[in-house]
Length: 272
Image (cartoon, rainbow, N blue to C red; front, side, top):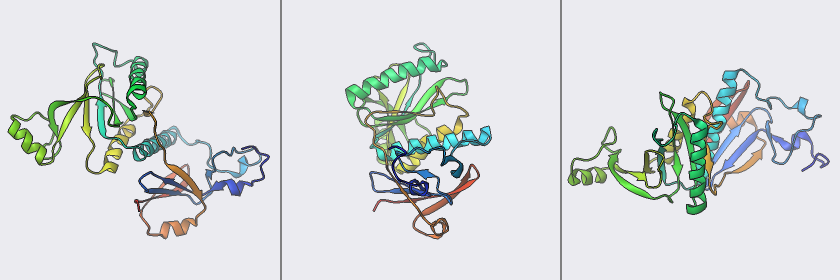
């Protein structure tokens, strides 16, 4: 949409953004100023002085925190908009690849992921993490399309950490009391892998994956996360709201935070 269209700045800028997820839940983010721009509109030079807070600015620490928030929001959007079935961890075998060389790792990883996307319909979102010694591995979500084999290990339930049951009887008891099977991904040949079927509070699992972004102080391989496949995204709607009224409404769990000298309030509403 070009600048010759007759629309004023107040008409394209709004102070409330709503994300609508496939399950019907809504995430509302409001600010006391109109900072959300309608899709398809770029800001002309005559508008720029009127719009505050559009550039990153701030200290390096502020910019890093902002970048992490955006990355975690993007991962959350992907996770809540797609039907993932397993939490996976992919590690790298030092005898097969230099797991400290991010360029070599990303090249191999992307080849493997792209192949599974084309052949198996893989959908994924993965967050890289560095071991204490600097070696790279990945955590994240995949859909139910990869070959899996029972590793013999059980996790969760009454177990404080994953382990192999001492007998088939113990295994059955653990599984019946809330523990879960740890699988290996059969065609991940670059190292060790685990896959655990998602269970319990899905939002908590999403938050767990996002915490890996919080731990890092810089992008790994130029990215905070890796995603691919035929992924869905939330629908984005923009509105104008009375910010003070938004703060006082008791429609859902309300949280506030500051960024770039501006206050924000966020609220999540469950599915109907």
